[in-house]
Length: 351
Image 1: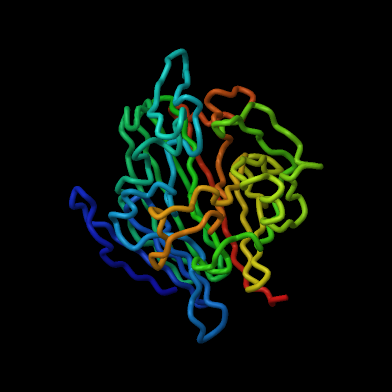
Image 2: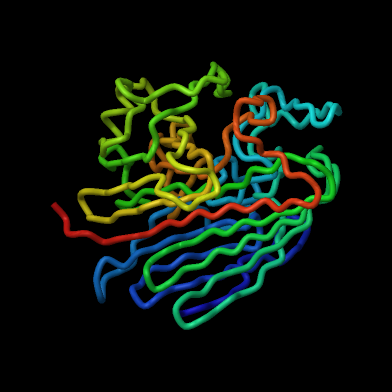
């Protein structure tokens, strides 16, 4: 394993940001920042002597990441996804969070975990290496109740597995629902879009949403709908049927808390494959519908089109704090939040 650390830049508050890079013997690597616990790069090397291919979208400066509206590579918290109206009630007490999306709270608020500094240290062994990150979220941060101590360990091994291990404890009851927000394009981050990607989801049901992208509370079978990815489907075909793309949470088959298959993604042209396993109840599938615009500049500084990449965010159900029928995301004092998500990368023969 090759492990390097370098200074990436300074935040507005003049805090130094470190970038850690881990590479295995196959030429697969990831880079991670101490700001936002952001995955700034994931690369694969197609064959010996070839140039590595960047698989994620990202920026080249701290300043850009401080204004990271798409949440490129960010660790999202305290609560990923949307909370309707930014409101919830917990043990009889009402809470009003920031509404940083139209009518809703999203991804922890205006700052959240993805725009704050983390304490980070390398962890290296012969067969795997990674970074352990920690931060303390004080009571009232982003208007959430309770102090939360969070730990995230991200590792890469010689089997081309990128593993995320989340842990958290709280001194008061509080909602917590963590995820990583990488944008993937297995054809390479400079490829035009992900329409030719093929996706399979290990899910038989999804969560319909209202006009503000908040779940209605229904858990609807995918069979017979354009949301059906139970067998491998071309993403572009499904996006066309859904008039603009996908941004929905799917219920992952199996028992929450057990590491089990959630998704497979293949780029047929290159043969690159990504398999995702997770312990979470849900998987948010987002096809980059809102990426288009001058202010969204990916690796290399290009202006991004819509659908330049896709996200598969392992998490609890959106708005679970207001939906008792959904699996709870409340962390009580004395309990521990645990979440594991694994990405396995493969290079298959091209068709």
